[in-house]
Image 1 (cartoon, helix red, strand yellow):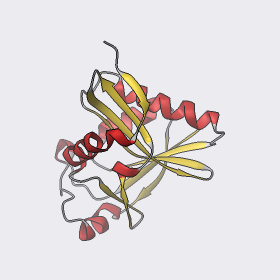
Image 2 (image 1 turned 180 degrees about the vertical axis):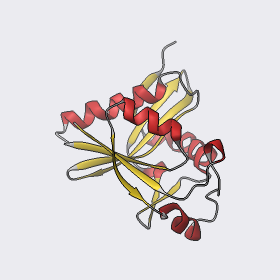
Image 3 (image 1 turned 135 degrees about the vertical axis):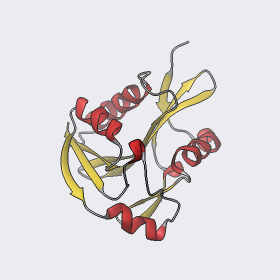
Length: 159
């Protein structure tokens, strides 16, 4: 059975909240000093039957959309790419000129994923994660590959 990608709906709330809690420690994500409840944002779910296997959440602004979270339960299976394709398709249909996404300096897999899909480095926010950790102590000190999590990297892609 193929994975189904569709916009998030109210009935997804419990599963989305659970996935974000498992993957991000909580659905509340800090961005530029502001807390966002990613479980309440628009986005897309990836479903394998009735099972949630992926999620992307978006902050839709005039002039750009920002991917706040992108998760695939089974990495390397193409679900992340399918979710990103759904976002790109909708953004183009609505004449959104660009997409952005931020990640922490330790997330080398995200660096590869986004660059292979047309995103480019735009800005490094030195110490951003350190400052966010003061308000959200649950952010770990070390991440992927044992790298200290300190900085935020902004990627952007024109559409």
